[in-house]
Each structure stands twice: as structure tokens, then as C-alpha cells.
Length: 61
Image 1 (cartoon, rainbow, N blue to C red):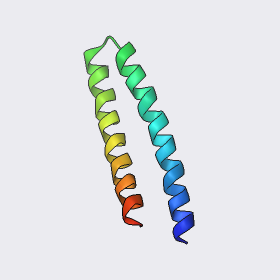
Image 2 (image 1 turned 60 degrees about the vertical axis):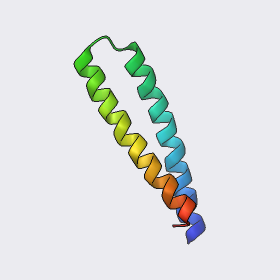
Image 3 (image 1 turned 90 degrees about the horizontal axis):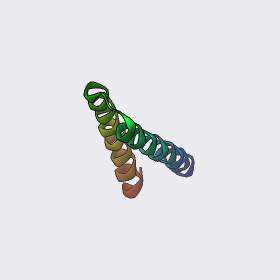
Image 4 (image 1 turned 180 degrees about the horizontal axis):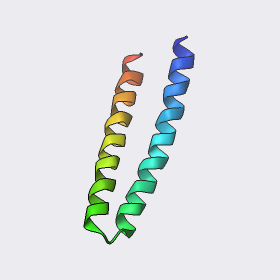
């Protein structure tokens, strides 16, 4: 069961890394400050979630 959970977390982490890269590109290309603020907030949320998954994986959950 732990292997399945670890594998799912790894897949989700990969997806999050891709989404974070896309958000960084969108922020760099965006001219509207309000839109940039929303994108940065979304990026921070995804980074936080990624870090939580990484911590769980390191701890063996």
C-alpha cells in the first residue's frame, strides 16, 4: 500500500512541477498586475502543496 501511495504522490509532484513552471512563464509574460497577483497566489499554493507532498514522501507516509 505504501508503494502505491508513494507512486501517486510522485505523479502528483511531477504534475505540480509542470504546473508551477507554466505559472512562472505566465507570470513573466503577463502585463496586468492584478492578473500577476492572482497567478503568484496560485503558484504559492501549488508550491506549498508540493512541499507538503515532498515532506510526506521523505517521512515515509
